[in-house]
Length: 319
Image (cartoon, rainbow, N blue to C red; front, side):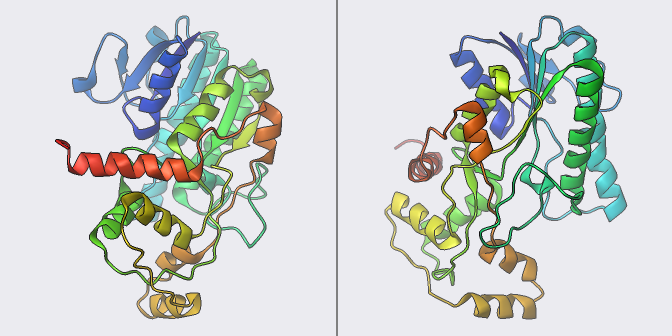
């Protein structure tokens, strides 16, 4: 088995490359930084005109992790933002897939995003693989358009396309908002989030990678779209409590009613933050489990413990 992993120096790509080598698969890695160049790497962008012809010989499967990632704050205007996402996430992806099909690559595993489904779910109405309408978010729309294009290429060429839509991914080395949460808990800063009863699906990095590796070879994966999570939806309150427990820190969550949080957030013009903290985003992974005979190998509690341990070790590398 010979794998090409794009975005191989990213949060997910690094772990996929490592897991594939553990399977004794050959791994070729695409990166953008020339400083990361080694014998088994390709240095290239993911663009409409990227030439992959010299790098696809003998490749059995591509795991496409590379993407222009979602940013909470974009400096450009809406149209410019969408075009920037499309250049990499749609056009760059489809360019690679077409050349892969021409080169005889058998399977293309595309790491998409749950934003293709939307931003939130109603209570007890989890997302499923079917999508009724395009997303309004620019990042999600670029991923949605890539999915549509990949399915068309699969129909035209026989390339086996597998789509995986993860929600928020956490794990060792996680950055952004998840790291900020750990910073707050470590510092003992009180938060008014002790009475949040929402349900959110998360996925620990090793659970996502386990599914990706499964999808590289499983005969039932071809042509399908899979949602993924830890199969243990959690509230914001439970998440913060679990982080504090893993850090052996006291729980400093104040039981403020959700309606009060929304009122203050709306007054300050921060309703989007309140929606993320208090809203639901659930995914139904029953089809993933049944189709692939797969279950997440790591529990939510163990995933948080591993994430916190790595975070604390990075703060105190000599200990």
